[in-house]
Image: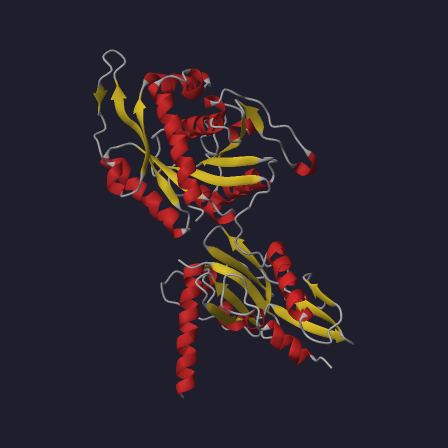
Length: 348
Length: 105
Protein backbone atom coordinates (compact mmCIF):
# COMPACT_ATOMS: atom_id res chain seq x y z
CA UNK A 1 0.00 0.00 0.00
CA UNK A 2 1.36 3.39 -0.98
CA UNK A 3 1.70 6.12 1.57
CA UNK A 4 2.44 9.81 1.45
CA UNK A 5 6.01 9.26 2.53
CA UNK A 6 6.72 7.08 -0.52
CA UNK A 7 5.31 9.76 -2.77
CA UNK A 8 7.39 12.51 -1.17
CA UNK A 9 10.53 10.39 -1.38
CA UNK A 10 9.89 9.86 -5.05
CA UNK A 11 9.28 13.58 -5.63
CA UNK A 12 12.51 14.40 -3.82
CA UNK A 13 14.32 12.95 -6.82
CA UNK A 14 13.01 15.78 -8.98
CA UNK A 15 15.23 18.87 -9.10
CA UNK A 16 13.71 22.25 -9.91
CA UNK A 17 14.74 22.97 -13.51
CA UNK A 18 18.03 24.84 -13.58
CA UNK A 19 18.78 23.97 -9.96
CA UNK A 20 20.26 21.11 -7.96
CA UNK A 21 17.61 21.61 -5.25
CA UNK A 22 14.61 19.31 -5.37
CA UNK A 23 11.03 20.48 -5.47
CA UNK A 24 10.10 18.96 -2.08
CA UNK A 25 12.98 20.49 -0.12
CA UNK A 26 12.39 23.84 -1.81
CA UNK A 27 8.81 23.73 -0.56
CA UNK A 28 7.19 23.86 -3.95
CA UNK A 29 5.21 20.69 -3.22
CA UNK A 30 2.38 21.41 -0.82
CA UNK A 31 -0.15 18.83 0.26
CA UNK A 32 -0.32 15.30 -1.11
CA UNK A 33 -3.65 13.50 -0.97
CA UNK A 34 -4.10 9.76 -1.40
CA UNK A 35 -7.45 8.28 -2.22
CA UNK A 36 -6.97 4.58 -2.54
CA UNK A 37 -4.26 4.30 -5.14
CA UNK A 38 -5.00 7.65 -6.70
CA UNK A 39 -2.75 10.51 -5.77
CA UNK A 40 -3.27 14.26 -5.92
CA UNK A 41 -0.25 16.53 -5.59
CA UNK A 42 -0.73 20.25 -4.88
CA UNK A 43 1.84 22.89 -5.70
CA UNK A 44 2.29 25.73 -3.27
CA UNK A 45 1.61 29.18 -4.72
CA UNK A 46 4.90 30.48 -6.04
CA UNK A 47 6.42 32.67 -8.68
CA UNK A 48 6.84 29.70 -11.04
CA UNK A 49 5.32 30.41 -14.45
CA UNK A 50 2.42 28.32 -15.79
CA UNK A 51 4.82 26.86 -18.38
CA UNK A 52 7.22 25.82 -15.68
CA UNK A 53 4.43 24.25 -13.63
CA UNK A 54 3.20 22.34 -16.66
CA UNK A 55 6.70 21.04 -17.28
CA UNK A 56 6.98 19.95 -13.65
CA UNK A 57 3.53 18.35 -13.79
CA UNK A 58 4.69 16.14 -16.65
CA UNK A 59 7.86 15.19 -14.78
CA UNK A 60 5.91 14.39 -11.62
CA UNK A 61 3.33 12.30 -13.45
CA UNK A 62 6.07 10.26 -15.12
CA UNK A 63 8.02 9.83 -11.89
CA UNK A 64 5.01 8.75 -9.83
CA UNK A 65 3.64 6.43 -12.48
CA UNK A 66 6.82 4.41 -12.06
CA UNK A 67 5.76 3.51 -8.50
CA UNK A 68 4.16 0.11 -8.30
CA UNK A 69 0.52 -0.02 -7.38
CA UNK A 70 -0.20 3.59 -8.21
CA UNK A 71 -3.50 4.64 -9.76
CA UNK A 72 -4.26 8.02 -11.28
CA UNK A 73 -1.84 10.86 -10.72
CA UNK A 74 -3.10 14.41 -10.85
CA UNK A 75 -1.22 17.56 -10.10
CA UNK A 76 -2.96 20.74 -9.05
CA UNK A 77 -1.18 23.88 -10.04
CA UNK A 78 -4.01 26.16 -8.98
CA UNK A 79 -3.99 27.90 -5.69
CA UNK A 80 -5.62 25.90 -2.91
CA UNK A 81 -8.40 27.62 -1.03
CA UNK A 82 -8.43 28.41 2.66
CA UNK A 83 -6.06 30.40 4.83
CA UNK A 84 -3.00 28.65 3.39
CA UNK A 85 -3.83 30.24 0.05
CA UNK A 86 -2.41 33.59 1.03
CA UNK A 87 -0.56 35.62 -0.04
CA UNK A 88 -2.29 36.57 -3.24
CA UNK A 89 -0.27 37.24 -6.32
CA UNK A 90 3.32 36.10 -6.03
CA UNK A 91 4.81 37.74 -9.02
CA UNK A 92 8.35 37.03 -10.03
CA UNK A 93 10.29 39.59 -11.99
CA UNK A 94 9.00 38.88 -15.46
CA UNK A 95 10.62 39.55 -18.79
CA UNK A 96 7.33 40.36 -20.53
CA UNK A 97 5.80 43.17 -18.52
CA UNK A 98 3.53 44.66 -21.15
CA UNK A 99 1.36 42.27 -23.13
CA UNK A 100 2.46 42.07 -26.75
CA UNK A 101 5.45 44.33 -26.25
CA UNK A 102 8.88 42.87 -26.96
CA UNK A 103 11.83 44.84 -25.69
CA UNK A 104 11.59 48.09 -23.82
CA UNK A 105 14.56 50.41 -24.23
CA UNK A 106 14.95 53.72 -22.42
CA UNK A 107 16.65 56.65 -24.12
CA UNK A 108 18.18 58.76 -21.39
CA UNK A 109 20.61 61.59 -20.93
CA UNK A 110 22.25 63.02 -17.86
CA UNK A 111 21.57 66.59 -18.93
CA UNK A 112 19.16 68.45 -21.15
CA UNK A 113 19.72 69.81 -24.61
CA UNK A 114 21.82 66.99 -25.96
CA UNK A 115 19.23 66.09 -28.59
CA UNK A 116 17.79 63.11 -26.82
CA UNK A 117 14.32 63.38 -28.36
CA UNK A 118 15.81 63.94 -31.81
CA UNK A 119 17.82 60.78 -31.38
CA UNK A 120 14.82 58.86 -30.00
CA UNK A 121 12.57 59.86 -32.89
CA UNK A 122 15.12 59.06 -35.59
CA UNK A 123 16.12 55.84 -33.88
CA UNK A 124 12.47 54.74 -33.76
CA UNK A 125 12.02 55.46 -37.46
CA UNK A 126 15.31 53.75 -38.34
CA UNK A 127 14.47 50.60 -36.36
CA UNK A 128 11.06 50.54 -38.04
CA UNK A 129 12.76 50.83 -41.43
CA UNK A 130 14.65 47.62 -40.61
CA UNK A 131 11.30 45.85 -40.49
CA UNK A 132 10.45 45.92 -36.77
CA UNK A 133 7.25 47.17 -35.15
CA UNK A 134 8.18 50.12 -33.00
CA UNK A 135 6.45 52.21 -30.36
CA UNK A 136 7.70 55.47 -28.91
CA UNK A 137 6.64 56.58 -25.46
CA UNK A 138 7.45 60.22 -24.83
CA UNK A 139 8.07 60.19 -21.09
CA UNK A 140 9.22 63.79 -21.03
CA UNK A 141 5.97 64.94 -19.47
CA UNK A 142 7.28 68.42 -18.72
CA UNK A 143 8.48 69.22 -22.22
CA UNK A 144 6.99 66.72 -24.65
CA UNK A 145 8.58 67.26 -28.06
CA UNK A 146 7.78 64.01 -29.83
CA UNK A 147 4.45 65.30 -31.32
CA UNK A 148 6.25 68.22 -32.99
CA UNK A 149 9.16 66.12 -34.20
CA UNK A 150 6.84 63.45 -35.59
CA UNK A 151 4.53 66.02 -37.12
CA UNK A 152 1.28 65.01 -35.49
CA UNK A 153 -1.18 66.67 -33.20
CA UNK A 154 -3.69 63.86 -33.29
CA UNK A 155 -5.65 63.03 -30.17
CA UNK A 156 -5.35 59.41 -29.07
CA UNK A 157 -8.60 57.54 -29.67
CA UNK A 158 -10.40 56.24 -26.63
CA UNK A 159 -10.87 52.50 -26.29
CA UNK A 160 -12.84 50.42 -23.81
CA UNK A 161 -12.05 50.40 -20.07
CA UNK A 162 -10.59 53.91 -20.04
CA UNK A 163 -7.76 52.80 -22.29
CA UNK A 164 -6.47 54.63 -25.34
CA UNK A 165 -4.96 53.70 -28.67
CA UNK A 166 -1.56 55.19 -29.45
CA UNK A 167 -1.31 57.69 -32.30
CA UNK A 168 0.15 56.19 -35.48
CA UNK A 169 2.57 58.22 -37.57
CA UNK A 170 5.17 57.04 -40.08
CA UNK A 171 4.41 53.49 -38.94
CA UNK A 172 5.35 54.26 -35.33
CA UNK A 173 2.92 53.96 -32.40
CA UNK A 174 3.23 57.12 -30.34
CA UNK A 175 2.07 58.36 -27.00
CA UNK A 176 3.02 61.69 -25.49
CA UNK A 177 1.76 64.10 -22.88
CA UNK A 178 1.78 66.59 -25.73
CA UNK A 179 -1.29 64.86 -27.18
CA UNK A 180 -3.26 65.75 -24.05
CA UNK A 181 -2.13 69.35 -23.54
CA UNK A 182 -2.57 72.53 -25.46
CA UNK A 183 0.54 74.31 -26.64
CA UNK A 184 0.63 77.13 -24.14
CA UNK A 185 -0.09 75.68 -20.74
CA UNK A 186 3.00 75.02 -18.67
CA UNK A 187 3.22 71.62 -17.08
CA UNK A 188 3.47 72.08 -13.34
CA UNK A 189 3.18 68.77 -11.59
CA UNK A 190 4.60 67.21 -8.52
CA UNK A 191 6.37 63.87 -8.56
CA UNK A 192 3.40 61.64 -7.64
CA UNK A 193 1.30 63.02 -10.50
CA UNK A 194 4.11 62.41 -12.95
CA UNK A 195 4.54 58.88 -11.65
CA UNK A 196 0.83 58.28 -12.18
CA UNK A 197 1.06 59.45 -15.77
CA UNK A 198 3.99 57.19 -16.55
CA UNK A 199 2.08 54.25 -15.09
CA UNK A 200 -0.91 55.10 -17.27
CA UNK A 201 1.26 55.41 -20.36
CA UNK A 202 2.54 51.91 -19.70
CA UNK A 203 -0.66 50.18 -18.62
CA UNK A 204 -3.54 52.08 -20.20
CA UNK A 205 -2.20 52.44 -23.72
CA UNK A 206 -3.13 49.61 -26.06
CA UNK A 207 0.30 49.22 -27.60
CA UNK A 208 -0.65 46.13 -29.57
CA UNK A 209 2.12 43.93 -30.91
CA UNK A 210 5.49 45.68 -30.82
CA UNK A 211 9.03 44.43 -31.22
CA UNK A 212 10.52 47.50 -29.57
CA UNK A 213 9.14 50.16 -27.32
CA UNK A 214 11.47 53.14 -27.00
CA UNK A 215 10.98 55.42 -24.04
CA UNK A 216 12.18 58.98 -24.41
CA UNK A 217 13.03 59.97 -20.83
CA UNK A 218 13.22 63.53 -19.57
CA UNK A 219 16.77 64.70 -18.83
CA UNK A 220 18.33 63.74 -15.54
CA UNK A 221 17.69 61.07 -12.99
CA UNK A 222 14.33 62.08 -11.54
CA UNK A 223 10.89 60.64 -10.84
CA UNK A 224 10.14 59.54 -14.36
CA UNK A 225 13.28 57.49 -14.81
CA UNK A 226 12.84 55.86 -11.41
CA UNK A 227 9.14 55.13 -11.91
CA UNK A 228 9.86 53.54 -15.24
CA UNK A 229 12.63 51.39 -13.80
CA UNK A 230 10.34 50.29 -10.98
CA UNK A 231 7.20 49.65 -12.98
CA UNK A 232 8.60 47.45 -15.71
CA UNK A 233 11.75 45.42 -16.22
CA UNK A 234 13.56 47.53 -18.80
CA UNK A 235 15.56 45.53 -21.29
CA UNK A 236 18.15 48.21 -21.68
CA UNK A 237 19.03 51.85 -21.61
CA UNK A 238 20.98 54.00 -24.02
CA UNK A 239 22.50 57.29 -22.96
CA UNK A 240 22.67 60.25 -25.30
CA UNK A 241 25.44 62.75 -24.76
CA UNK A 242 27.47 65.41 -26.47
CA UNK A 243 31.25 64.96 -26.54
CA UNK A 244 32.32 67.65 -24.10
CA UNK A 245 33.38 66.84 -20.57
CA UNK A 246 30.66 68.80 -18.81
CA UNK A 247 27.97 66.67 -20.39
CA UNK A 248 29.97 63.64 -19.44
CA UNK A 249 29.76 64.49 -15.78
CA UNK A 250 26.00 64.08 -15.96
CA UNK A 251 26.23 61.01 -18.15
CA UNK A 252 27.99 59.30 -15.28
CA UNK A 253 25.02 60.05 -13.05
CA UNK A 254 22.76 58.47 -15.63
CA UNK A 255 25.01 55.44 -15.75
CA UNK A 256 24.97 54.95 -11.99
CA UNK A 257 21.20 55.29 -11.92
CA UNK A 258 20.76 52.51 -14.46
CA UNK A 259 23.27 50.36 -12.60
CA UNK A 260 21.45 50.82 -9.31
CA UNK A 261 18.17 49.61 -10.73
CA UNK A 262 19.85 46.80 -12.71
CA UNK A 263 19.02 48.09 -16.15
CA UNK A 264 21.64 46.92 -18.64
CA UNK A 265 23.32 49.89 -20.31
CA UNK A 266 23.53 49.17 -24.01
CA UNK A 267 25.90 52.03 -24.70
CA UNK A 268 26.33 55.71 -25.38
CA UNK A 269 25.16 57.66 -28.40
CA UNK A 270 27.33 60.67 -29.12
CA UNK A 271 25.12 63.37 -30.59
CA UNK A 272 26.43 66.58 -32.18
CA UNK A 273 29.58 64.56 -32.41
CA UNK A 274 31.11 66.93 -34.99
CA UNK A 275 29.93 69.66 -37.32
CA UNK A 276 29.68 68.59 -40.89
CA UNK A 277 30.27 71.75 -42.92
CA UNK A 278 27.62 71.94 -45.63
CA UNK A 279 29.96 73.94 -47.89
CA UNK A 280 33.24 72.11 -47.81
CA UNK A 281 32.17 68.82 -46.19
CA UNK A 282 34.88 69.23 -43.57
CA UNK A 283 34.48 67.77 -40.10
CA UNK A 284 34.74 70.29 -37.28
CA UNK A 285 34.83 68.93 -33.71
CA UNK A 286 33.31 71.92 -31.96
CA UNK A 287 32.50 70.05 -28.76
CA UNK A 288 35.85 68.33 -28.63
CA UNK A 289 36.41 64.68 -29.20
CA UNK A 290 36.51 61.46 -27.28
CA UNK A 291 34.61 62.64 -24.20
CA UNK A 292 32.07 59.86 -24.31
CA UNK A 293 34.78 57.24 -24.75
CA UNK A 294 35.90 58.10 -21.22
CA UNK A 295 32.76 56.50 -19.84
CA UNK A 296 34.21 53.12 -20.78
CA UNK A 297 30.88 52.21 -22.36
CA UNK A 298 30.37 51.09 -25.90
CA UNK A 299 29.83 53.97 -28.31
CA UNK A 300 26.79 52.87 -30.28
CA UNK A 301 26.91 55.71 -32.74
CA UNK A 302 28.22 59.18 -33.53
CA UNK A 303 25.65 61.54 -34.97
CA UNK A 304 27.09 64.66 -36.63
CA UNK A 305 25.63 68.14 -36.17
CA UNK A 306 23.94 69.16 -39.40
CA UNK A 307 21.16 71.58 -40.12
CA UNK A 308 18.88 69.01 -41.74
CA UNK A 309 18.49 67.16 -38.46
CA UNK A 310 17.12 70.30 -36.85
CA UNK A 311 14.87 71.27 -39.77
CA UNK A 312 13.57 67.71 -39.97
CA UNK A 313 12.60 67.92 -36.31
CA UNK A 314 10.91 71.29 -36.65
CA UNK A 315 9.08 70.23 -39.80
CA UNK A 316 7.80 67.09 -38.15
CA UNK A 317 9.56 64.71 -40.48
CA UNK A 318 12.67 63.01 -39.07
CA UNK A 319 15.74 63.28 -41.29
CA UNK A 320 15.84 59.50 -41.69
CA UNK A 321 12.56 59.83 -43.63
CA UNK A 322 13.09 63.22 -45.20
CA UNK A 323 16.63 62.65 -46.51
CA UNK A 324 17.19 58.88 -46.40
CA UNK A 325 20.46 59.20 -48.34
CA UNK A 326 21.97 61.82 -46.06
CA UNK A 327 25.08 60.61 -44.16
CA UNK A 328 23.24 61.34 -40.91
CA UNK A 329 20.39 59.04 -41.91
CA UNK A 330 22.97 56.40 -42.65
CA UNK A 331 24.46 57.00 -39.19
CA UNK A 332 21.01 56.51 -37.61
CA UNK A 333 20.45 53.25 -39.49
CA UNK A 334 23.82 51.96 -38.32
CA UNK A 335 22.87 53.06 -34.83
CA UNK A 336 19.55 51.19 -35.09
CA UNK A 337 21.36 47.98 -36.02
CA UNK A 338 23.81 48.39 -33.14
CA UNK A 339 21.04 49.03 -30.62
CA UNK A 340 19.16 45.94 -31.78
CA UNK A 341 22.30 43.84 -31.50
CA UNK A 342 23.15 45.21 -28.08
CA UNK A 343 19.63 44.62 -26.78
CA UNK A 344 19.64 41.00 -27.93
CA UNK A 345 22.91 40.41 -26.15
CA UNK A 346 21.60 41.90 -22.94
CA UNK A 347 18.99 39.16 -22.69
CA UNK A 348 21.73 36.52 -22.18
CA UNK B 1 24.19 40.11 -9.25
CA UNK B 2 22.00 37.04 -8.58
CA UNK B 3 18.26 37.38 -9.11
CA UNK B 4 15.46 35.17 -7.77
CA UNK B 5 14.64 32.15 -9.92
CA UNK B 6 11.75 31.04 -7.70
CA UNK B 7 9.91 32.70 -4.84
CA UNK B 8 7.79 30.61 -2.49
CA UNK B 9 5.97 32.01 0.53
CA UNK B 10 5.83 29.25 3.13
CA UNK B 11 2.67 30.24 4.96
CA UNK B 12 2.80 27.35 7.47
CA UNK B 13 6.35 28.16 8.47
CA UNK B 14 5.71 31.94 8.19
CA UNK B 15 8.80 32.34 6.07
CA UNK B 16 9.68 33.39 2.56
CA UNK B 17 11.93 31.15 0.52
CA UNK B 18 13.92 32.38 -2.46
CA UNK B 19 15.82 30.16 -4.85
CA UNK B 20 18.42 32.40 -6.53
CA UNK B 21 19.69 31.89 -10.03
CA UNK B 22 23.14 31.04 -8.64
CA UNK B 23 21.36 28.11 -6.91
CA UNK B 24 21.62 29.51 -3.41
CA UNK B 25 18.50 29.11 -1.27
CA UNK B 26 17.50 31.72 1.31
CA UNK B 27 14.71 31.28 3.84
CA UNK B 28 13.58 34.42 5.63
CA UNK B 29 11.23 34.30 8.63
CA UNK B 30 8.48 36.89 8.09
CA UNK B 31 9.31 38.63 11.38
CA UNK B 32 12.90 39.02 10.21
CA UNK B 33 11.93 40.46 6.83
CA UNK B 34 9.35 42.78 8.33
CA UNK B 35 11.79 43.85 11.02
CA UNK B 36 14.46 44.84 8.53
CA UNK B 37 12.03 46.63 6.21
CA UNK B 38 14.21 49.06 4.25
CA UNK B 39 11.62 51.81 3.76
CA UNK B 40 12.21 55.31 5.01
CA UNK B 41 9.36 55.27 7.51
CA UNK B 42 10.88 52.20 9.19
CA UNK B 43 14.53 53.17 8.85
CA UNK B 44 14.40 56.96 9.04
CA UNK B 45 17.15 59.03 7.56
CA UNK B 46 19.77 58.81 10.26
CA UNK B 47 21.81 56.15 8.53
CA UNK B 48 21.50 53.79 11.46
CA UNK B 49 19.59 50.59 10.80
CA UNK B 50 16.63 49.76 12.99
CA UNK B 51 14.88 46.49 13.59
CA UNK B 52 11.11 47.01 13.75
CA UNK B 53 9.50 44.56 16.11
CA UNK B 54 6.14 43.42 14.73
CA UNK B 55 4.20 40.63 16.36
CA UNK B 56 3.35 37.78 13.97
CA UNK B 57 3.61 39.75 10.74
CA UNK B 58 1.67 38.16 7.89
CA UNK B 59 2.75 38.46 4.29
CA UNK B 60 -0.11 39.60 2.07
CA UNK B 61 1.46 39.82 -1.34
CA UNK B 62 4.71 40.11 -3.24
CA UNK B 63 5.19 42.22 -6.31
CA UNK B 64 8.11 42.77 -8.63
CA UNK B 65 9.85 46.14 -8.79
CA UNK B 66 11.51 46.57 -12.16
CA UNK B 67 14.60 44.42 -12.59
CA UNK B 68 16.01 44.84 -9.17
CA UNK B 69 13.70 44.41 -6.21
CA UNK B 70 10.59 42.97 -4.58
CA UNK B 71 7.83 44.94 -2.93
CA UNK B 72 6.30 43.18 0.08
CA UNK B 73 2.86 43.97 1.42
CA UNK B 74 2.17 43.00 5.03
CA UNK B 75 -1.03 42.15 6.85
CA UNK B 76 -1.02 45.47 8.70
CA UNK B 77 -1.16 47.27 5.34
CA UNK B 78 2.50 48.28 5.41
CA UNK B 79 3.70 48.15 1.81
CA UNK B 80 6.40 50.76 1.32
CA UNK B 81 9.37 48.39 1.61
CA UNK B 82 11.25 47.88 -1.63
CA UNK B 83 13.67 45.01 -0.97
CA UNK B 84 16.41 45.15 -3.57
CA UNK B 85 17.98 41.82 -4.51
CA UNK B 86 21.29 43.07 -3.10
CA UNK B 87 19.59 43.86 0.18
CA UNK B 88 17.89 40.46 0.32
CA UNK B 89 21.25 38.76 -0.23
CA UNK B 90 22.76 40.82 2.58
CA UNK B 91 19.89 39.81 4.87
CA UNK B 92 20.44 36.21 3.86
CA UNK B 93 24.12 36.35 4.83
CA UNK B 94 23.18 38.01 8.08
CA UNK B 95 20.74 35.17 8.79
CA UNK B 96 23.38 32.55 8.04
CA UNK B 97 25.72 34.21 10.53
CA UNK B 98 22.99 34.31 13.16
CA UNK B 99 22.21 30.65 12.62
CA UNK B 100 25.88 29.69 12.83
CA UNK B 101 26.41 31.61 16.06
CA UNK B 102 23.22 30.12 17.45
CA UNK B 103 24.46 26.63 16.65
CA UNK B 104 27.74 27.28 18.44
CA UNK B 105 25.96 28.04 21.60
